[in-house]
Amino acid sequence: MNWLNYYSVRLRLTREEVLFVLTKILSPMDFCERLCRFIKKNKKMKNYIKTTIYILIFILFKQQACARIPFITFDPTPIAYQHVAAEIYTIFDQTRTAGMLHSPGVSGKWGALPNLGLQFSTSLITHIPIPSRPGRTTHTGLRDISVGAKYRFFDEGGFQAAFFPIVDLPTGNANLSLGNGKVWARLPFWFQKKWGAWKVDIGGGYAINSAPGKLNYFFGGGKVRYEFTEELTLGIELVYQNKDTLMAQELTLINAGGYYFLTKDLKIFFSAGHSIIGEKRLLSCFGVGWEW
Image (cartoon, rainbow, N blue to C red; front, top):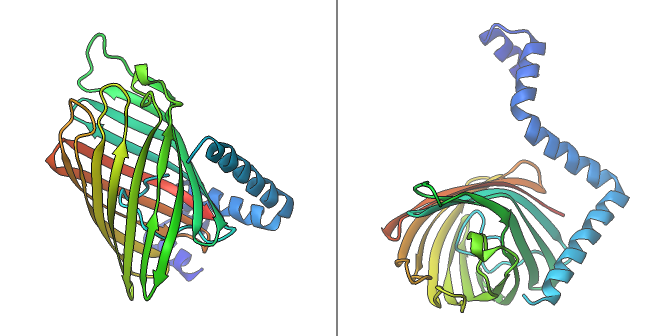
């Protein structure tokens, strides 16, 4: 605890006052770590949470099969066999006509088979018209539910390849701009090459959307990540997308972010990005993830 003595002298505070300030600052993260430790020790609780996530994924996947966090470009690596992961996050997505706040957002992953991971994600979404004026009101509700299956069909010599179809189910209210209004799908392939602490992901695909005012479109991206330590990984990506609605434009966006592991199983993730060509777009994301 020498560091505590150091800061108490530098800040002219008692040890108890320094601990009080740190507790106030770090209390949300401390709560997450305490919760993880409690669940790990409590076998019944751990099994209950696993079973709950299995049931959720099974129900969603039966209707047909993601979180795009913190990066838009996916990697081809599925969650490990028989592992389960959960994430809670906040995303803000702003265009020239509206802001979309996804908070809280939740996602779950399950390693159903070797090289096959199932995923789902949804969030409470708030649609904020820009600019705000009479007749254009803010709406909040559940957004569409995304379900997907990531199948890795090649993994050799530091190179991986996967097919990752994602289907969005129309659970959000399209009339209030909280959903698409119809089932739609994205059909991408993702590839990765690893050199030491470097990882490069690249890929893309085609989206099929028959909802009123929507268009089918191509999309793709590339991402570079570097593992600075076992805890910290940072990356940057470049993303391209054709126009996806009758009123939209093509989009090229740059996004940067990363992960920081607080423990072996608990991580925080973050990113921020902005369009550089075409449709005006601003993105930011922050969340907490846990895998066991």
